[in-house]
Length: 114
Image 1 (cartoon, helix red, strand yellow):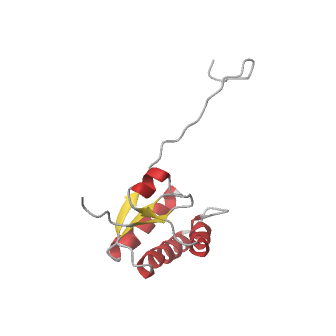
Image 2 (spheres, helix red, strand yellow):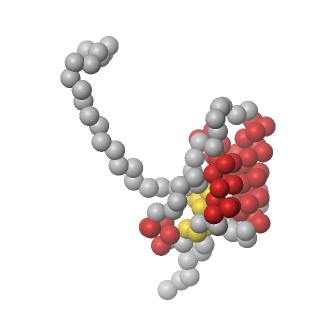
């Protein structure tokens, strides 16, 4: 059986058991906190901030010697992050997990489309 290539989890969320079985690796707690901080925005950032955050995240992956990274988060950051990882020779994999949600309909609420 071929050895699985390790993939750094560069998302805010903990990798699922399935992702871990597929080779996704969590950084240590301190590094995970830094990654979460870089992926968190309290207001819409400009291109300078997006570039800076993407470079910082890609630098983390490079310093940890990963050749693959799983990314996911704010859509407006992902193209910046993907570009920075690719420039460093790091393969980009997008996070996937099945979201489970439940919808409820409430009677008597105003619906302008009815």
